[in-house]
Image (cartoon, rainbow, N blue to C red; front, side, top):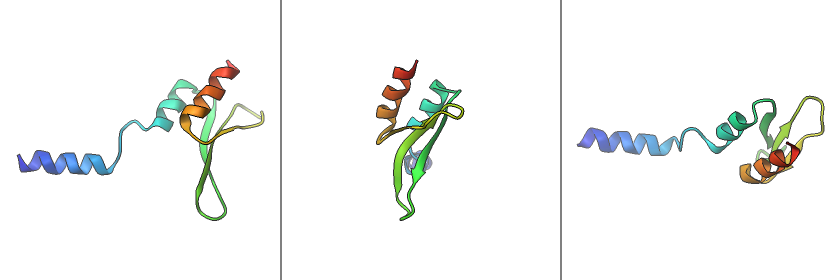
Length: 72
């Protein structure tokens, strides 16, 4: 029983898998998807770019998904 509890704790530390960003990338495999990294070290917007087009930007993966769906 103790081993199962320890495994649950370990899994909880490493978040849900796949992550929301990984799911999004799987839904839109032709798009490059990344999270902006600001010069002050904080994370910024979620971004998606298809080829040389201008990147789409959104504060959350759900918002980025909406923008990507609108492009279809």
